[in-house]
Image (cartoon, rainbow, N blue to C red; front, side, top):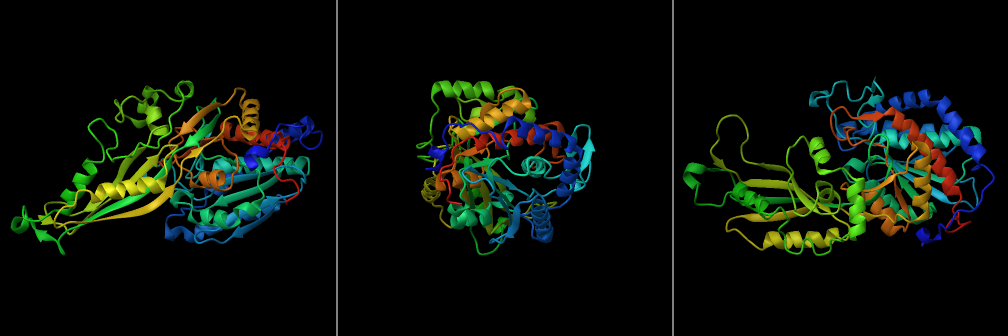
Length: 482
C-alpha cells in the first residue's frame, strides 16, 4: 500500500537543500504583501456552491484559480463533474520523487451582510492583523498558502522538490459529490503517494496542530404525513394523529435522560482510545471552560463521563438542524398540518460505519408505528470517519515543517468535523493523509465576520515550503509509474 511505502528520509542535495529552502523562504517574505492582495481577489468571488444563483460566480472563481496556477508553470485545467468544476493542476518534473496531492475547496458558505457582518462578506477588508471576508479562512486562505509555497519554489529553484497535484473543488460545503465521483473514477491514476489537507483549526495562534481523526456524518430527514389536507383542530383535535406531535415524539426520544443517543446498538462499534492517548488528547485540546466560552454558554450537556472536547471528537452525536410543519406566522392558525419533517445529522466516531448506523436509525423509527401517520426516512448524505497514523513518515515530515515555521512542535488533536474526501483518500486510495490546518477556532468559519489571521497565513506559506522539501526525502511508493 502507498502508506507503507513512503519510507525513511534519505539524503538530498538538490532543490530540497538548505539553500533551496532558504531561497524559497526569502521569496515568500519579499512577496508576502502581494500574496495577501491576491488572496483578496480570490475572496471577492461569491463562490457559494450550494446556491444555484451563484453558479456563474463559482465557475468564474474556478477559472481564475486555474489561470493563476497555469501562470505559475503548472499544467492547470478545469475538470467538469456532475456539479461544479474541479480545478486540477499538475507538476511532474521530479522523477523518482514522491507525488503529493494537495486538496482544498474554493466554494464557501452562504453569507449576507444582514447576518451581522461588520463589512461586506465578499469585499475583503483588513482590520488589524486579519483579513475579513467569506472564505478567507475556510478554505481559500488555507489553500492559497500552499499555492504560494509552490510559487516560491518555482520562482527560485525553477522546480519543485516533489511531484505535485492540486485538486480544488467547488462543492465541499454541499457534500463533495463531484469530487467523490472524480476520485472514484480517476483516483488511482493520480499517482499520489500522500495527501495534504488544510481545512481545519490550529490549537491556538502560536501552536500548530495536526489532526489525527475526524468524525464521519450521516445526514437524514424524517418526514411524517398525516391527513390528506390540513384539518381544523377544533373539529379533529384529539381524534387524529398530528404529524408535528409524532415527529416531536421521535425527536424527543433520540436521547435518553443521561444525554446518550437512545437508538439501540448506536455505540456498539465506537472505537475507544487507550488511556494514555486519551490523557494526551485532553492535554492538547481545549478544556471545558474554553469550549463553553466559545459557545457562549455557562454549562454543557451530553453523554456523561466525557469532557466537552471528547464529546465532540471521540464520541458520536445526533443533532436536529431544522423542523418544518404547520403554521409559524403571526397570530393563530388552528390547524393540524398534513406534514412535518426534521433534518438530522449524526456525527460518527472512528469505528462507526454510516451504512450500519443508517440501518439502525431506520429500524428504530419503524419500531413504534403510529396509527394514521406515515413516517418516511430519507438519507441525504454519508461520510466515513477518518483516522491518521501519527507515526507515518509523511506526518512526521509535516510536523517537522510546522515546528520550524512556528517555533514550537505541533500538538496532535482530533476534530469533530467531517471531510468526505479525506475518508476516500485514506480508505479507498490507501494514501497517508496529513490533516494540518491553519485556521483559528475563532476565525468565524460558517459565521459572520469570517477572517484569516495574516501572521498565521505567512507562517502557513513557510510551513508548506518546508514541508515540500521534507516530503522529497521520502521514498515514493511506485517510482516511475507517472
